[in-house]
Amino acid sequence: MPLQCLVMDYHFPCSPEVLFERLTDHEQFGKLIGQSIKRIQDGPESTPNGVGSVRRIHLAPGISFDETVVDYEAPRRMVYRVSRGSPIKNHRGELLFHATDDGTRLVYRIEFAPKLPGTGWLLGKLIRGPLDKGLRKLQTALATG
Image 1 (cartoon, one colour):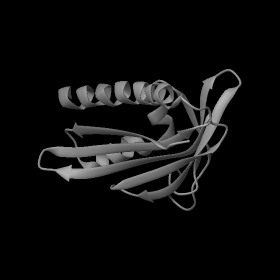
Image 2 (cartoon, helix red, strand yellow; image 1 turned 90 degrees about the vertical axis):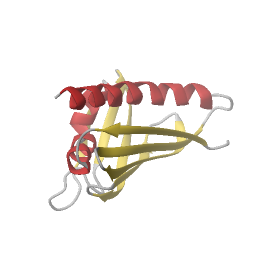
Image 3 (cartoon, helix red, strand yellow; image 1 turned 45 degrees about the horizontal axis):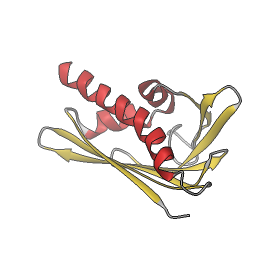
Image 4 (tube, helix red, strand yellow; image 1 turned 120 degrees about the horizontal axis):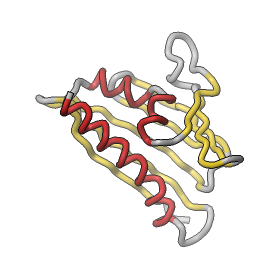
């Protein structure tokens, strides 16, 4: 299957530190995108949402998948991979935080390969939809105080 790639680019009126904290907290991220997300395994040491942490995303009763954080460089970068239960293969998500003169640029990149041929476009829409909606909502909330 060919690899699908989604790239979302946003600007937020806050520091990279503030945005990184908001978007890498697994439970808060779930609330933002309207999904039930729970951290089921802490990362080591003092960073519970860091490398090695696992979050479970519940899509519907009996349907869930896990994502494992594989890179965590506060406040610059977080990378995760789907580690269990997804209808896609080779799923990798990367959030990059870049300081700007008036806030933070977020580049959110997701790569994946569908398990079923011809479904990449649909899976892309299903992945992008709640992320885009939640991130735009956060942009508005931060801009209006």
